[in-house]
Length: 250
Image (tube, rainbow, N blue to C red; front, side, top):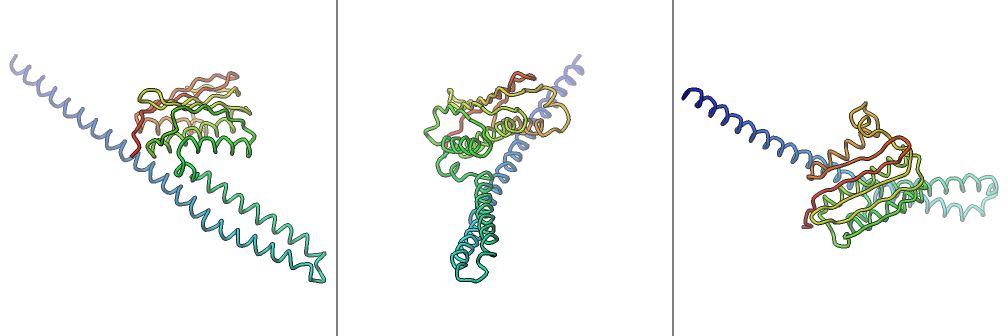
């Protein structure tokens, strides 16, 4: 009996050590995954700045130079022949400039860093309506004060991904986004009345774009101790709900 008791105690101690090692391994993994996510966001910020300050300034200079040439064109004998081509060149330069600025903002909108989550979500809603025709109805509560920068980035990316899915897959022209504080949580709800889908099959199925996007949203939330719920069915729209613990702004 004593031998059996000693073996049970030994096994129990080993199990406790293994459990502690598992917890520590998961903690290190979460820390590493968070660090990788932050590096990705820093790289987005760097690329956005380079697009705006580098390529954007070059295209601005090119546009100005073409416009000056356009003004002087009237002095040439072949102005009638060259004018349409030069006008096309000016328009192409303007379009390229606008596209580079828009890409810079989509990579990392400066308004998110400068003014916070509320302003960034309002900008995103306006941009999607202007560029893609998606009407986004925003309901924001408790966001007047700045949140932790990482949490603001997380929520912005979640909403951005969910609305991108609406555009690509839902076949809807309207979506509702609600973000609010509730106790110690920040809660999100993104819904649409589109074609819907089977969430379980999408999350565990093949590597589809929708499945990857949803799994990415779920994984990022879990890094911050949050949770993701998806309610949808074919022909019945989609509701994406999320809750994540609030972090105090530094």
